[in-house]
Length: 336
Ligand code: 2RA
Image (cartoon, rainbow, N blue to C red; front, side):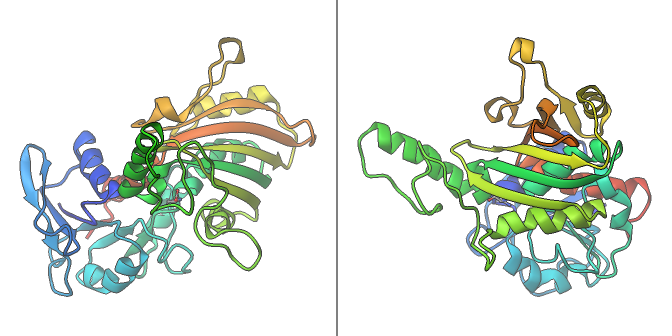
């Protein structure tokens, strides 16, 4: 098995290296690709150094079985043909193909089998905020169909990349040292602040990030669920949080939702008000699963339930989900 990572120097690219190593992914050779900026850099994998190759329009992907791409939508679009021409599966972390009809959008805990139907050789990894929400909601959907979701996200700096994480840390230092604050990656200073905008605004007043949650959730869950989101950047470093109000077809009890989450795939129940136990981003960085707590009835809706979740944005929200898709393909013997 020959595997490639495109965008190896980015925050998600680096996480791919860690996740593949941590999970002892069954690969014989790993090839790293990057832009002119990162070509030539070297990264350790299983004790050996691998040099990043320049991504070019050539036959470099001829022997590749699986390519994890995380270098932005523009690069994914530009190189999809080169990557997939000889049968490699492209598991793409960008937004380039997510809503294309002939590209499956996959979260293994919800719709793993969709990955098998990929006429273009491309499988899209959903947006991080959507991945975490559907992973947590699938066990509830299995109890009773979810008709409506209201969600407010609390998204960490990591969602904007490694440079944005470094900028947040720098901003805190600058504030404490009384220096002018550097603002490059976000529209405003994020340290000591929250910013109610992620990505650009659409004509309907929602941001692109918020519309991703509406559209991607329907596609992954094969559902008519209506999801109205408010996405907010908060000064956490790498785990996203979400407050969710959902409405199911039949009223559910808190106990049955707790039970479903406790036994759900990829989710962990962390919910005990008597001991102030609930998920928090500071303590859950680096974890594989999505953690769910604060489960209670929605006081404003008889068929409603409210909960809080936290997941590592770079891990389950990006690299890990893509690797889990690849693991599924290997398990069912569906790689070239
Ligand atoms: C963010 N959801 O948090 C984006 C990353 N894909 O900015």
